[in-house]
Length: 396
Ligand code: MLT
Image (tube, rainbow, N blue to C red; front, top):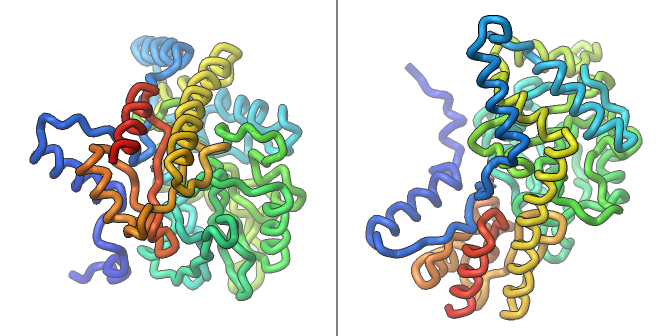
C-alpha cells in the first residue's frame, strides 16, 4: 500500500495543534499557573440568547414526530439560505441569490475542499503569511504554491503577481495580520482574475468585524466579481459558533471554469455535485441557530459581542503601542499582528511570553516565512483576561 506522497510535503504538524501541544506540556509542568490564551481565535463569550432560544426550539422540533427532520437539503435549508441572501447581500445592495448560497459546517472545510473542483496542475497563489488551511489543502493535492509576500514594506497588501496564477486565496479582513483591503485594492484583484481567467477564493470570515464604512464586506461589492470569485463565510467568530459549526459558501451562477476541450462549466453545479456526494449537510439545529442571528434581537446581541471583542482589540493595541511595540491590524479585525521585540524569532518570543507572562500568542512563522519575527494576538478572550494578559506583557 502506498501513501499520497504529497502529504510528505506538509510541515510536521498543523500550526494550532502544535501550539496546543506546547501549551499542554507547559501546563503539565506548571499545574498551578494560570495561562491566558490569546493564541487560536477561539471565542469566549457564550451564544447569544436568541441563538440559545432557537436551539431549544429546534431540539423540540427534533423530538416530535410532526416536526422531526432527517437528512436536510444538500445546499442547506431554504429558511437559512433566504435569510443569508437577504440580510448579508440584498439588504447591502449586493446581487447574490439564495440558490447561490451553500450552507456548510464552517469556512475551514470549504476553503480546504473547494480546490477539488480545479485541475491538479492549477497554479495557486496564497498570501504569505497565510491561514495554513489554504496552502496545506493544495499541498495535499500536489499543487505548486506561489507565495505573495505581505510585509511591513507593502503594508501587508500583496502585490499583483507578475506570473499567471489560476487560483488566488484572499482573506480580508486578514487572518493573521488583521489588515484590510480597500475597495480599490480589491478591485485590482478582481481585474487581474478577469484578465487571467483566474478564480479568487475569498475568505470573508471576519467581515462582521469591519467598522470602517469604506471597507468592502464582500468581494461581490466589486463589479465583475460574480464572474471570478467564490466567497466563504463563517458564524464561528461572528456568533460564537466555533463549537456549534455553521457557515456558508457563495458560488455565483456566473462563475465558470474550462474543461481541457475549452467547454465552460458552472462551478455552482459542480460544487453541488461535490457536496451532495461527500457532505450530508449541517445539522438542522445549527441552521436554525444560524437563522436566529438574522432576527432583530439576534443581530443586536451578536453586534454587542463583536463590540466587546473589538473593545479588547482596542485595549490591546493601546497597551502594546504604549510599550513601543510595532503593531498592525486590530482595527477592523479581531487579530493584532506584532513585530517581536529585540530581533527575537517568532518561536523565541512565543516561548518567552508563555514562560515569563504565561500568555499564549501565535508565532507568525507558523503562517509562512514572511511571518518570521512577528506574533499574532487575538481579541477573543474575556475583558478581564485580556487586561490581565496586557499587564503581564507590560511586566516582562
Ligand atoms: C485562527 O486562530 O486562526 C482560527 O481560529 C482558526 C480557524 O478558524 O480555524
